Image 1 (tube, one colour):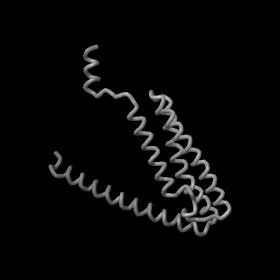
Image 2 (cartoon, rainbow, N blue to C red):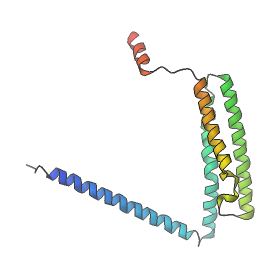
Image 3 (cartoon, rainbow, N blue to C red):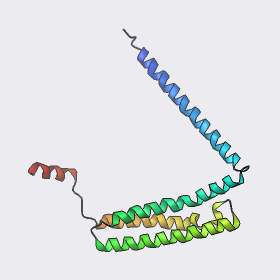
Image 4 (tube, rainbow, N blue to C red):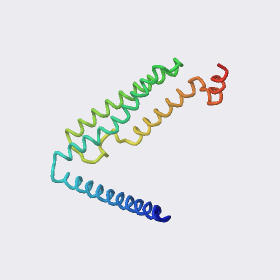
Length: 160
């Protein structure tokens, strides 16, 4: 027969080892990140790849969000909300294409390594995009038909 406290000792030991493993993994991850960023100074093409990646992240993120919303808007029941959403998405996507092209041209001509010189990271531009996403979401939510709650759905199933 197993001792009463042995399962608690085994549980405590596994929890302590797990916590130590997580802390060790976190320290190793930080050291690897430090090594990677330290190598960027010695490998010039790696810094260019890194900057291109940093430049393309907001464009890829917001473009994918707008395209997902664009596909969901096709099935929206309100025509006015659809047209307003299409207009906002089209303008936003056009701005993202323009600013990304302008940023790539700026990068290829000047090769700045800080984001202050690129339009994709302008605070007003990013805030306007986030606001547009939320406003279109609110517009579509307010113009959509009301959903039935779980009680009404249950009552309908019971009556059928």
